[in-house]
Amino acid sequence: MQTLNVDLNERAYPIHIGKGLLHRAELILPHLAQKQVAIVTNTTVAPLYLDTLSNALTAEGINIVPIILPDGEAYKNSDTLNQIYGALLTHRCERKTTLIALGGGVIGDLTGFAAATYLRGVPFIQVPTTLLAQVDSSVGGKTGINHPLGKNMVGAFYQPKLVLADTATLDTLADRELSAGLAEVIKYGLIRDLPFFEWLERNMAKLRVRDQEAVAYAIKRSCESKAEVVIADERESGVRALLNLGHTFGHAIEAGMGYGNWLHGEGVAAGTMLAAKLSQHLGWLNEQDVARIRALFVSAGLPVDAPDLGVDTYLDLMAIDKKVEGGRMRFVLLKAIGSAVVTADVAESALRDTLSETAHHG
Image 1 (cartoon, rainbow, N blue to C red):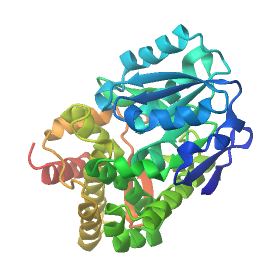
Image 2 (cartoon, rainbow, N blue to C red):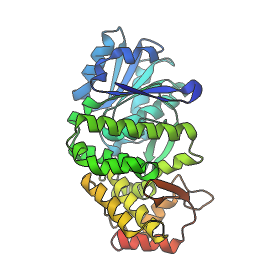
Image 3 (cartoon, rainbow, N blue to C red):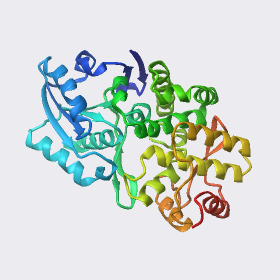
Image 4 (cartoon, helix red, strand yellow):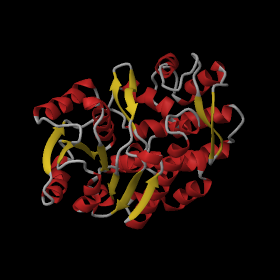
């Protein structure tokens, strides 16, 4: 097991990464304020891992309230959030009841937002079971739900007490979900870690076949990167925005195609290619750089061509992104592989050209 620390002073918390951690109740017990926990999971993860985690905790005298939600991005909404509140109220869960998110990014985001708002805030723990959640969404305290008009538009910054990433859960992950997680792994290399990008170029085949050592290294390196950025800028007033590389375009793809049709990581991959093309338009990346980024996404099994939503649809969907400031869209772009910047200085003509070239023809 490897442990990293997200050092947010009195809200600091550990990230444990290793195989078989779901069995290790002793890692969770120090973080519980009372002997009752609500485990929020979904219909896919529950049959696989709910018993393992519940049994480990029950053996220590912990009372479990299981909350099993439908699976998928399409359910990341206020109706599902209300299901969580309903279960918590029905079981008379108190302010010291800890919520445990057992699942991927959707479960983590929903559970975190429920924890931030139920009784004005109860503790929660992230137990991510997908690669995407283990390398990205479980760390850093971003929680939220989607709105029909935009992804993650309603939410809160609310840090977990603990992140427990059991790499054994990746054994049951569908290949498509594994690839989606790799999009966020590649992102760290692109925005701030050229040596990691080069490591990924050499080791992608190992990651695709879930080589234990390679996967553990990629998770650790990604979490270290995320933790450093979050410590520097918890509420995204500056450097943390770099973690959104590809996300402005990607969220537009997800919303435009209907939540759940494109996985988040797939939207991020195609969105990152749009960001790379736009960076090339501005004269920052050259053709070889763009080809190299494309090749890495392809080797990860990810889509690199954005769907044809039409240029105006893209612009409309992107205009309500959370990074809009003073009415101006802010983009995370690449000065070079391994170096990202946030800029609002993008001519609409360059944006339109990029969208019309890359997202086929609108």
